[in-house]
Image (cartoon, rainbow, N blue to C red; front, side, top):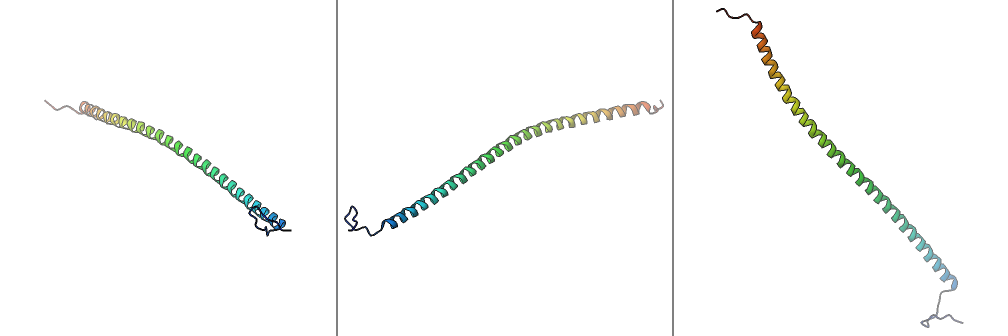
Length: 109
């Protein structure tokens, strides 16, 4: 008795060989699924890392803006202090000159 398939050809593979092919295909499928699962997990980790990096970059941008505003305020204050310092120095010079003129003996007339 010969086994014939739907096309009428003789099936030369034994049932044991067919079972072996199925087991081999099953193992290959399982390995491929494991590889796919690993790739998906790596992708998820990369996405999480990218999200973390984006959050850090946004935080750095916020800090940069805050620091720039603080620096601008500090520069304005520094310039105001420099102006006040110049005014005080001028007033002190006038006061010193006034005191010297009072303390110096007057010229004889």
